[in-house]
Image (cartoon, rainbow, N blue to C red; front, side):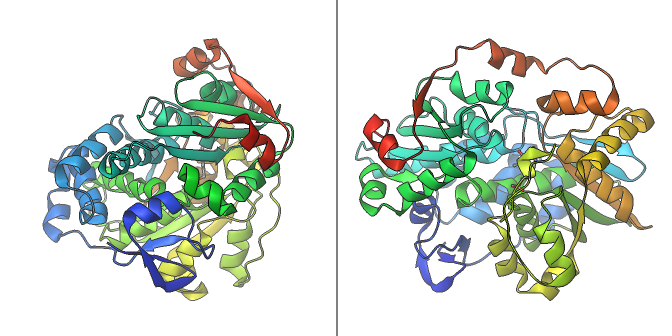
Length: 433
Ligand SMILES: *Cc1c(COP(=O)(O)O)cnc(C)c1O
């Protein structure tokens, strides 16, 4: 399969190049030349397959031209290693729980798939050189990438995060692992971390010497495996969806998850429409309503993994859906303030006994507001609620135990290096290998 850049469709690269480059040289995002439809027979019998078989069929359509079946099967089996149950929350509203992986958030899926795919590419190349994965994080990406990549041969991971600006629980998830994971505490903001990473990628010599790549949702190897769980959800819901239209609501920040959902639909999954749920960072909501896209700096909210002012995958959505008309016809936008989010967490718990996290709460609220007769809704519950313990306790006036896995992380020994916010400081540490 060839991959083209959203900014210059005539320039194409191979899968290997797309994964190592991350971003296209012209600043665009890579897209596959063809999104293959899965056969009718697959959908007719999807409920009879195991989650791994379903994910493998999807992976085969996406990556089967480039990766031998046996290798792809191994990569998928290591990825689909934890459940993603669909849970009924309220009448016609279901949560797709994506938080049963090691760091209790959906990013575990893509991070794990990408690490295994990179391992395969490194083994295939066989020159014994490392790949260096460099990521800036405000919390969740760092933990998913660290836990997805830890112990994987041939991959060296360097995580930059702003000192004193991520929660203790988040920090513990990427600073206590050791092995091939190095965490750098930057004397600066998240924007400084992101700037250093961008400067490193723009430094041609550095990029080639160290095989630098990124592991956020701009990378095709992180993004496309996120299609799997839309199919896994359908297999569980299929019977209940008979005669109904299926609406999928995605709490969105960089719009990677929503893009993966739209790709799943292009592959034939019967999703009738999408809802994009935002917090106060609502540039896509504004675009959907006005046709004008005006990115801006992000603002802080209680659903902080969605605090994004210039969503990187917007370009991919436009590429698939063509224009404002195409976007508007498939996607409805909603956004919610911090006080609405907290109120929803409390009310949903009282009325249904289901505990939402602040991101899932946006999804739930949007479905409550927008679901029409004849529609069944599913929102993505993107993180375990106790990852946001303070917010859910403030919202409900109750106390909650941290998930045992979070407690385990907090027991670990923090191991970081401190650096000034510059690329030179990063290079002189010698942590790229
Ligand atoms: C990353 C993240 C999101 C946003 O996902 P995008 O793919 O960036 O839109 C939502 N919720 C949680 C918990 C996240 O970690």
